[in-house]
Image 1 (cartoon, rainbow, N blue to C red):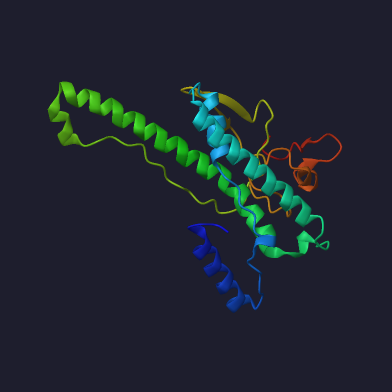
Image 2 (cartoon, rainbow, N blue to C red; image 1 turned 180 degrees about the vertical axis):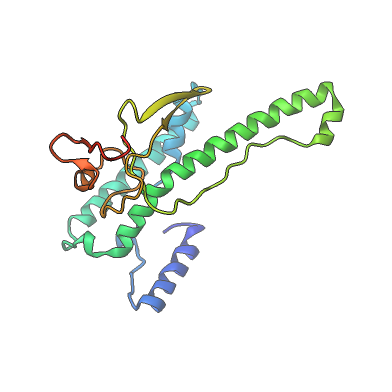
Length: 215
């Protein structure tokens, strides 16, 4: 059974049972534990960090444990009755949320890394000029602007361009191809979503925007 997470999981399941009147068993047969040590080992090897035999054996045991848990999970899944996932709204909402969060999380990680770099540079300057400490540590801030309605953009050469931001390449959209687009079933931030075929701004024969729209 899980260590420090057992109490948290049990609390969530108890709350689910009380609010949704659905009892989810919490036992070894339907609980699967995956060790993250094996992934740390891969990260260490990729970065050229050498480990001694004892450390390597520890990571090997971790990997073998995760493999066994995965095998047990698959054996359990194939014995479960079929279920229409599309009918489970909570799972669909969770999937949509995960997809929508990928870009904000990446942007936050980039912003944090930029601020760390700026803080290091500021620290070096303060060593030569202590008075700079009075100005505080400079930071890059971001402002989230909520759109009034959904928009559709495309990756045509005249509609976007690739810009260089340090070591990172970014896609900059130059135009809004369909300013007010309420097409249903489209996943936010997804490139080449097949549902765009049904957008009123899209020509289904050519796969391009009609001339009356922005691009």
